[in-house]
Image (cartoon, rainbow, N blue to C red; front, side):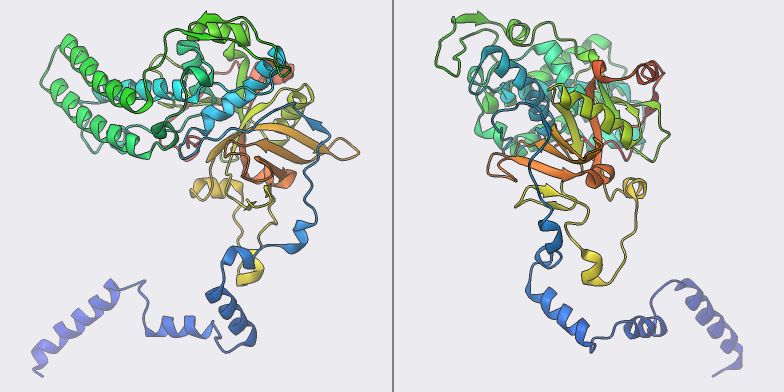
Amino acid sequence: MNKKIIFPVLLLAAMNISAQQGSIGNVQLEQIRKSYNANDPATRALTNALTNNEVKKLVLNRQNLATIDHNFKYKVKVQGISDQKQSGRCWMFTSMNVLRPLVIEKYQLSSFEFSHNYLYFWDVFEKANLYLEAQVKYAGKPMSDLYVDWLFKNPIGDGGVWSSFTNLADKYGLVPKEAMPETFASENTAWMMRVISTKLREDGLKLRELVNQKSKPQQLETTKISMLGEIYRILALNLGEPPTTFMYRFVTKDGDLGETKEFTPKTFMAEVLGPIDFTQYVMLMNDPTREYYKMYEIEYDRNVMEGRNWTYLNLPNEELKRFAMASIKNNRALYASCDVGKQLNSDLGYSDIDNYDFESLYGIKFGMNKAQRIQTFESGSSHGMALIAVDVDTNEVPVKWQFENSWGSSSGHNGYLTFSDTWFNEYLFRVVVQKDFLDENTLKLLEQKSTLLPPWDPMFQADE
């Protein structure tokens, strides 16, 4: 080889090695292979087990099964299990499940359900309006802007939280299930929401164009109303039109017939719930990634333009438990949400941090704590349920809790989910408590100005 070109070739080779820094080469791969001994008898046995069986059955902790007990010292008087079917409306079912025991007790009913379909119609409709207004607000920003990017990625969804329910109930009232029953689309929402999302993204582009063309506010409003008319049409064709008035009477558990009356959604809510003030219900959160005893608010986490954002007081777990116990002891169910799938034995309706032992099976340590799981998106609130029961030891310290779920009576333990107190610590995130059950110091904390968090924050995950 010509000596004049040897140096450039060597230089290129050195540059290539440098460029590949961090890649897996033969030396590294050999080290990794040596760390795994395929001929070890225990390793062969594990390979045989894992390649021929469902992993969840292999990691089921048999010793933990003997500890399962679905009896409770303190339990709210509840009746009946609801079923959200294939929809992301758990937050709505949970909110109504918190309130319906009051109706059943007041009128001595054998069963009762509010219409989820009615409120779902208005939820989607109002979310569409909020989305279009946000597109107008951020129309001057480039498509790469964080807010614009978030809007187009998340035009609409089924999810929500307690404040989503109260925003709708305050504005549109409530109706019984018979006044607006479920439809196939309300129980199987994916395709309808996909169609609406497509339309809203298209409408968002049109509104951005009009704003950037310096269109007058009246033209923007007229265009938006026309767009909402199309959304209303899609909803009405799939869900039916919400009633403005309806006839209804109560039938007691003994078969006694009440008087048939004409109601509007607002007068019906007033009739069954009385002068309820939803501002007297507050959300308490356990988010160890943030400072405790502080108020936080998630921007754009609402469904109604003029409604309340998701706002919460961040507290240690022990504080959440104390107030939750006070509520349950007073026969008041609570809205609660958690990372439902973690360590869930769905067959038995039981969740505990020791239900499934992946560490022993794989011989690998899994060591993230709650804060680290939140920060890395490994864990977050995914499902809302009514918290209805707590069991305690001889010192009145909680040992286990129970949810009333909305997955039907065949799910879990006859529709309920029992979970250990240690699971509460790791995977329960928020509860909604009436102010009557809070102490004076906590009530004062609620007066703080909230720290505003962006809608893409790791802890923003609407319950579904």
